Length: 301
Picture (tube, rainbow, N blue to C red):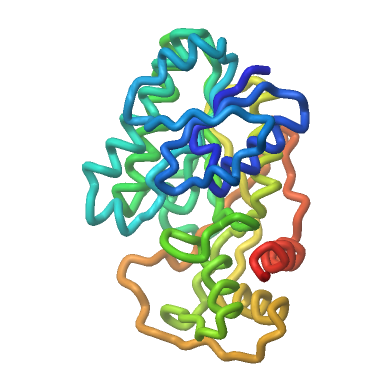
């Protein structure tokens, strides 16, 4: 398959590119390199330094794209709160540009959405038909992207699919900036710096390993279906338990520093993945301990 991966030089995108190349796809990476890195792009893939806020029609035609995996995003919730218009430009207009290019060449789209930022507080593992209650412009923009995906699918008859990811972690996640907590904890432990936990650490999330996410994305391309699917583990892990896993793999006895709870932070976010198992045959294979260990091995010198 000829596949365009937007954000393919980034953390999740580069793993998806590797998975697609491994099965023999011709892969074209679209990335403006504002967050992604050239060195993340395998030599077998073709890098196009482009911004998804600009039309991608010419590239779709030149490559004869059969599919898009749309991962390019403004992914920092704090930035979305401070600059909601910018967030919408990247996450909404960028998605529309991908859908327009896909419509031009008859390609299908797999779109990276989000679970935690869309569902809000979860008493039990969230299902795809649960209410969507985004707490940030980032979550609202991703939900809007899903709406456009559904509208274009109905408009042109192509089964576009949105994947709502849990908290993705693993190798190549930058321990600075918009990084997830696994990368932040491991990065600070590596540098001998104290790790901060906001509140009592009982907040829980669904941590899913990046290579499992890449497998799910490829499976979504292999089994054309429309709609929305959760991609997570179904396991809620507290921040304190996560810190313990990171501390053990780093061989550290350092205690975390507790700071005031951040306003608006979710207490619990976990995804029900049964529909993904039924629809695309996806089930996570990497335990938290194994994933944290692999991330540590990548991060340390």
